[in-house]
Image (cartoon, rainbow, N blue to C red; front, side, top):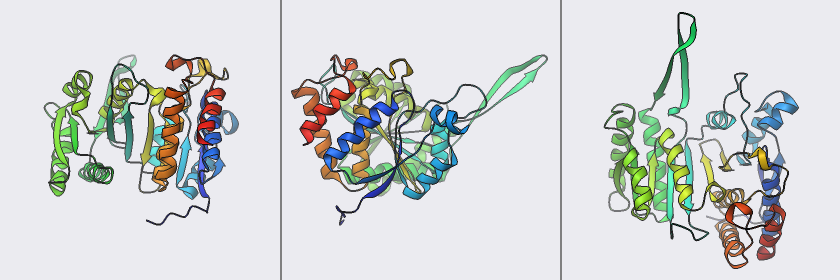
Length: 343
């Protein structure tokens, strides 16, 4: 593949809420020092957008992503009440971001050493899409709560093929399909059966096995090194991806990407942490690693590798860490130390 290293790549930048603008600013500074190829169109979403435009996901933001097909997003806050749906879910639906990729890689030595697991999560079907309603009984309007999940054969096949192609491209050896087909025989049984069908196309290149979700959660704690990649339905993937983050030091070290046919959005996966917003103490590593995934997506593996190496050196050799990682560095000080490594 021939990569044009001279032209700037249009990309949407969503700073986010809470600590989002701080960690996004640190990330943009580091990318500039790296010579990254992005030309940013800054847009808003979440509470910031609601306050400015009355909509947590304004049309201007959607239009920007439609144009650039590429976005880096800080953490967003979904307003409580008022009928507002999750902005993240709306973005996934709007751009058919069917694949969520969450790598968990040891950077800072801790309780678990040498973790290197990639979780691929189906992103727009299943129980997590929250097709819900209440049934009133008597004077109780919320007497019964009902939630409906739906998996399609097409959606299961699409995410399974994505996972196997990812494994081939990145030299992964085995995919473990996570399910609850012993109980949710239709909803997750379809997911498992379809993954098995797709796996046959990759025999000799990528192995496949499967785990019931509760057993997988336990085994991730007892012996995570047995896993290489996990392929999960929407809800199970949401839960297990955070467990994986816990194995490598927490959500502050966990990036995520959302890949679809129409766009790709990269993000820090933690929340907006309003309690520490504006204090200059937030850890920007999750957002920085998400930017690294974005660089890989546009074919700049060279820059992504330099960024990840510099992050590890800053954390371990220079011992510059924010307080959530046991240090006392500010967001700005960490960014400055990282930029020194990149220069």
